Image (cartoon, rainbow, N blue to C red; front, side, top):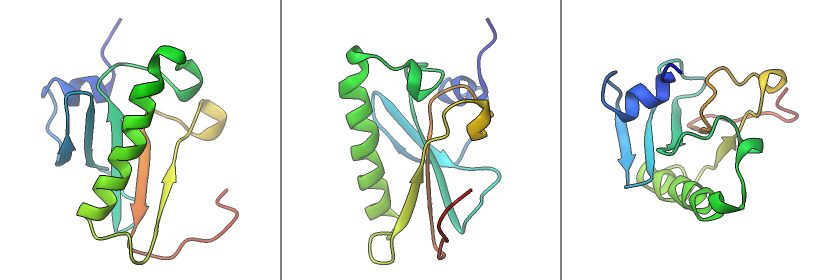
Length: 114
């Protein structure tokens, strides 16, 4: 099976503007930003979508959310707020089937989002 775009970024086969990295998590700037700040946070373990995660991924999912918190502080988003989005499946507009969280900030957002 071919590697996803994100797996190629993890393996450094495709360049990315990395903003945060641990043994299990990688975060980088989105190449098609939808806000002044738009960062993608991914697990290094290939999980196609959130609904494919299982109980064994519980710790990793927690690390992803804690990474969002660390990155938001690093990017000075905490004062004005930010949005975190996970698209799960085609109907939710997921285009890369490797679990990823979008951190978006630097502007106001409306509700409902879609």
